[in-house]
Image (cartoon, rainbow, N blue to C red; front, top):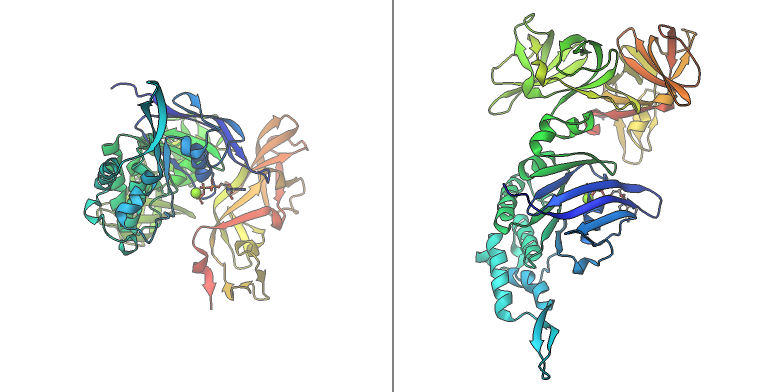
Length: 507
Ligand SMILES: Nc1ncnc2c1ncn2[C@@H]1O[C@H](COP(=O)(O)OP(=O)(O)OP(=O)(O)O)[C@@H](O)[C@H]1O
Ligand SMILES: [Mg+2]
């Protein structure tokens, strides 16, 4: 295959808004001619801002944007050979389909070389003639499959048809690059699916570069040649859909792309890792005792008769998905999402195994302690491992307070919540865990299993009796194998519900 040219490069591109917040941070990317490239990331991660910088609606505060090797950072939008399709397409409601698409072309002036009276060649700007406009509009409408609807009022079109008019309007200028910012998000599920295939088809017909933005992982996986996964303005991973699905670089990417089981794990031997209370063979090796993230895709979990696998569990939920069933198996307090074409009854005991090459082990970013299988007990405490910690459950509902009975009251919206047994993700900053020799003062006790000196402080890993690890930054020195207690102030435990807030509403 011939090597395609790079059409757009972003080199160390950053954007810091006036409020001092950097929303795009050192973004580097080469886009090839004709590529379908997608930025994927959660809301607010900087996708639109990146696209707006490419379009020229926003200036980078650092780095440069190159088009065919030329810096276009300072070129105004209308001089860039790019066109944008926005999430909220603004069509002219009083014009029909044809006139909506022709609108820009009628205003456009193109350079033509003419010979003046003196016989010199000069460049003049002329409007396009009606015939040229007609040919261009017809072709654009053909590509979006609306050629039969030229005369329809746009207000009589369905959402999908309106979006296709918006696309026709963008491609009629024959841009080299089409920027699409969540163009399908206003459509219902079925129409989205259809339009995804149609967009893919248009991409092929046009042969130009599509730069797509979405927060929908499935959409990114089905359409793109390459995906850029972004978080908080920073690129996490760039790769083909297969790369990103099969070899996610960290737990964030794994969680964002496809469904996965993600666990806290610990290396307990050579290519042996412990998670969900069992030891598993792996193919990646990490230092002994290192805390790692484990990712197992649901389709890679093998269910069997009790005692025949690596660990036993109990099926607690079953959903029929057409081709397969989706089960949740509880192994202790851990949930394992799995798929099987064979039926199993809810409540039955099963064993779980996973081929070792399907256990992905990743370095943990030790930036915070995160407990993904925490829950709230009947005294509004958060249980981490088996130890309850006082916490502030009103943080789960902004502007709420607790009543005498322990319900969380949201006065503004007249709602009342009961968080007993709610599954939560609890997060504690590394410097908010307080270690003490006095075993009576903390919520949990554990043994120091690892110490590293990081420049100006120690970082400890403390393992509790129930196998939870706390990573702690501290100025004070302890020794390995010291038995210590751990205390966290209630306000220092951040909580996030795993299910929707509505689920906990009470009358
Ligand atoms: N003009 C601005 N001034 C200050 N902050 C801004 C401005 N525009 C965007 N932001 C902030 O930059 C961050 C990234 O915004 P952006 O619109 O790029 O996110 P996004 O990834 O497109 O999100 P979404 O999926 O919700 O569309 C947000 O926190 C947003 O509030
Ligand atoms: Mg956006």
